[in-house]
Length: 182
Image (spheres, rainbow, N blue to C red):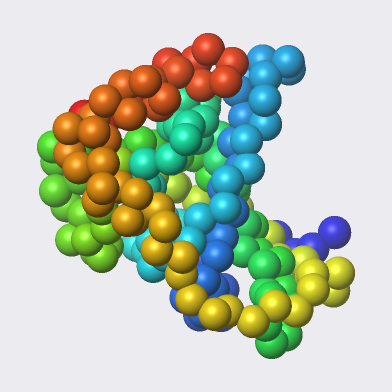
């Protein structure tokens, strides 16, 4: 088992800032529900304090994380070193969905790059930080971000994204409702 911390230390923050990829895990309360694990890229995560991070969430094929957060708030964010020294770092916390038009959206949106398809911001209050060895994580080299998702959103346009979210993002795989940005 790795080491557990109550908040992010400066070396944890430095490690996170070097990462190009992170994973978000969430689950419904139901034992029969689907555990969700989503990879996130782009320059989409910000450290707000040693106990608070936020990431810009883009429109995707589902909205599982938001539905789970609205039901129970549980979230884990994981980073893994694919270059350099091995390390896995997990943030355990409670998440909140921030939608466009809200006061929190207005406060946070300027921290992120303007990306087509921005749907919501996930704000995480961190209550635990765990580090572990990462010895089994393979080495990979970062070549760049894929532009496919952003171009897809640009091609859909605002009205197309609104309709897509209505059809694909309003309900989770397990039937849980989720707020979605219109």
